[in-house]
Image (cartoon, rainbow, N blue to C red; front, side, top):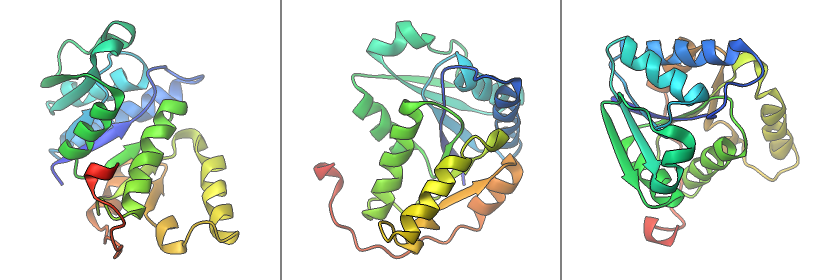
Length: 193
């Protein structure tokens, strides 16, 4: 695996543990020679993971919509910064550049990015691994909801198993290296998204 997209917040969160977890992931990505693909911000957890990758000698590619550049302040020291016109272009570009996806703690934007890529996997648009780094058990309620969706038959178990979860970056990345894609009949093509 050469590149991973990370979806996360442009805020620090309510505890230093979130920043620390982002830094641990960044260090682990650089150690494994995995390029970070992310939203391009210098703020919050986004900035922390990018700074950690760069400090450890790794590569970080940011994808930032023009209209967010002034609000989120694009990171000035990235390996590459790609400016796009829209949020949709940002997500499509990140998907094209990445061989897998990880969600760190974040708000609605992080959830929207993660759920879109999760849905694309269910629809057969990609067979890339996706995971949740459950720092400080932030995502426990979401994981419980996934289990509830499966129990109530709104999501098949095979799709539930697509979302890899761990609390430690190295353990999550280990799961990524052993990921076996499920067989999904494509329902649509990228031009229909």
